[in-house]
Structures are given as C-alpha cells and as structure tokens.
Length: 335
Image 1: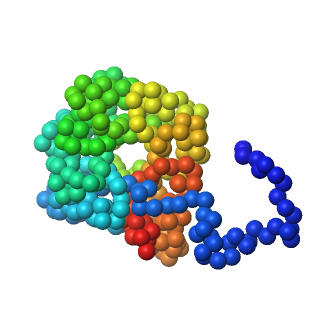
Image 2: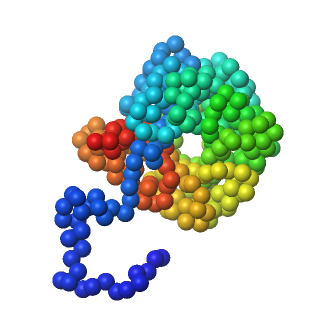
Image 3: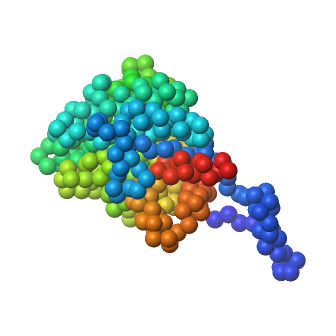
C-alpha cells in the first residue's frame, strides 16, 4: 500500500472539493487519461453469404464479411483506434476434431487480414490463436479420449500462428491456455522469418461465466462438450496468474492479457505492477451484454457507463483494453 509522505492537512485548511469544483480543474488534475489509442476493437468475422449479420446476444455487434471487416478497420483508423482483433465464425461443415480449418492458408482469417491490410495498412491486426472456433467439440486444443491434450495441441497452435503471421497479422494472441504454447509459437515464428510478429498472450485467462455471448457469436456454444476448467484458470486464484504471466514472458510474449475484465481488475493491478510489461484486459462479451441490457431498460446512462468502465481499466494499470464499445468510446473521446 502506498503511504503519503506527510499527514494531510485537517479541515478546514484542506478542502478536497476545491479540486473538483469545475470541469476545467477536474480535467487538469485527472490522474487517468483515456484516449482512443488505448482501445482495441474486437471484430467477429464470418464466412457466410451476408456482409453483416446481427449477433442476438450482443446488441450492436455484427458478424462481418472480410469486406465489412476492412470497412471497420478504416473506421478504426479514422477514429484513432490503433488495432482491431479478429475472431472467426466459420461454417460448421468444416469443423472437425483437430480444427483443420484453423490452419487453412486460404481460410477466413487470412482473407480478413489481407482485406484489412489492403484497406487500412496503418491499423494493427491481432488474431486469436486457439482451435475452439474450428473444432467439433468446441475446445481450444486437441481432444483425445475425452481429454484436452496439451502437447499435441502445441503443434496445431504454432502452425495456426504461423499461418496468421504469413497472411500479414501484426499480433498473434494465443488464448488457448495450453502450457508451453508461447514458446512453441515464438519458435515457429523465429524459424520462419517472422521475428517481428508480436505475441500478446492471454496469460491469465479464467474459466468464466462471462463468455457466453461470445461463444454464441462465433458459433462454438452448441459445440462445446463439457467445460474448460482443466486449462483455463480457477477464478479463486490470484498468485497462479503471476506464475502464468511469468512463464509466458519467459517464453517470448511481448505483452500479456487478463480475461475477463472488470471482475479481475485486482489481477490487472498485480500483473502490471509486478512485471511492468504492457498489460491488456478484455471487456468480454458478458460484460458488454449486461451493460447493454441495463442500458436498454434505461437503468444506465450509456455514454457515462462506457467511459467510466474503460477508465477503470486504465486506472488499474492497463496499457489497452479490448472492448466491443471501442468505436463508440472513441467517438465520445473525440468530442
């Protein structure tokens, strides 16, 4: 705990409200500054016939074709958002036990990367490295005899990351939580000339109830057999997160992520203060959906709630935040 170097003056000599008395002084003395450059915009992309298809559980979010994803990247650039993150919804017919579609060089994600880089090369592109969107069992790794096997999954994940980097991804983000996957990915990137590709590791990803709407959006909810508690973290644990982060940094991660977001700001604070590396958090689909439901009922002021929650991430120590509110927040901040 930080201690003050001197005892505060007593009232009435000290009146803290003086520093809150006017908008100009509140701006002048703000300890946390949120800008569009702090935002990452997650895009759900799909291989369907429609350019845009609404996600029922996430009002305001759409599954986008590669062409529409490129338009979103142009919008991100114009709003000052530095990076978009891609998450796929693919045809169930291509899903199988080992997620073959995840390593298709002509697949959905490579197509989206190329479309975005043609339209807005200034915008960073982050890709999700995990198999769950491509498997018929909904798990992030390879399943054998009903068990998610760690080491057999590493080759698949490393190949997926290579495919993304080869297509032009700037950042690969392993979200699978397999042990050793950052090292496997880093070695694959180095061996193939992609030493400048960043790894943003989902280092502290918890087995959470807040992922439901996302799984609906990417089409893995009905596929999932069992749960992910054997590889995603127990929400009771905090010290474990530090061990996971330390391991990923040692294996070559350039930045780390905590997921979910608001319920885990204590983890964000511990990670950012302990390691002093760029620390991100994901304001996940369940957080977004809860807020949108309350906003729809008139129980929350949308603009104020969006900026307050995103500022909380920055105050806790985040270098950036993945949020479905990114374009809305950027417009509010640009006023």
